Image 1 (cartoon, rainbow, N blue to C red):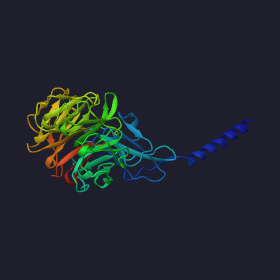
Image 2 (cartoon, helix red, strand yellow; image 1 turned 90 degrees about the horizontal axis):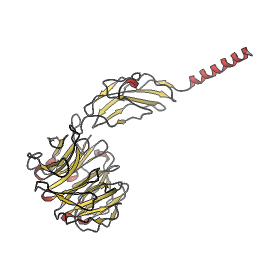
Image 3 (cartoon, rainbow, N blue to C red; image 1 turned 180 degrees about the vertical axis):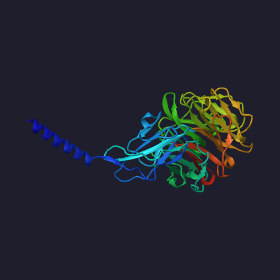
Length: 415
């Protein structure tokens, strides 16, 4: 019996060994290794993929990494069955990150890794990848751009375009149901574009758009989506202090204080996560609202026409900063949304009209003559090379990119 059991165990071992020989195993990683391209808070890793091969990618905030030490490297991340190109998100600008890759088939163990390579994420629009000008998207002036699930840009004559990444080749014309000027577009889970004569367009997919009844004939210049008063809303602002709101992007109502808090034209509206909503406009107008329906005029300490508004974080202190920009390079800031300070020195020259400001990983303002200005704290600004002299009207921040649109189909991209 004992000899029989030993023979049986020997046969089973042989079967297992034979099975292992035909199961998963390591293969050589790509001979060319991994190529890295640094972006704003991201690094894109690329490599040559072969059919039937699984790739595991390892990276960490370190000067080097290997398949043997990644488990003991602080902050390391492993990506199982990674596909090229792979975007590593949420990285710290200015820090060094290293990557390596191994390969296997049928779930086998990984073999030797590719040589460790490193890159340093940096703010968008800075060397070695400054602002890039794309081929004009049509001949009409583009007046607004927003990110939802894709970039959507709108402009004069009702023109509309969309792009998944803001690159020149990816902009595609959208069939527009109107020929009137579209001045802004916003996203709140659905898209709304607004324009002259109270035009409001609605879309769930950025492809098919329908006209909605806004209840207003005023020109609408700004739109944004967010949460306020505990509910999601889209808000549009425009001529004569017009303020409209909607819970679904289809049914629109005039705010209680529409045209009462101010009769000045309003050009931009923004939401803060706290639920507070801001609108800015002519003659230094700044309005705030806790719910999108009741609005209060606050003292801005400027009479300059304000065209853009955003909020962001001072990269040094971590404090929230509210920023409004406008004519003549005007900059108005606040730490509490109550007391506003006018910068002694305008952004750019006195002739630069700032049309919009946005925040993603930094503050960016755009304006006339191709002006692009950036700031990491909201108060100290630097001019950037924009590669265009066209007037820039709107800027949007996507997951990894900034898209800017302007006169005569101008479009710029920074990543």
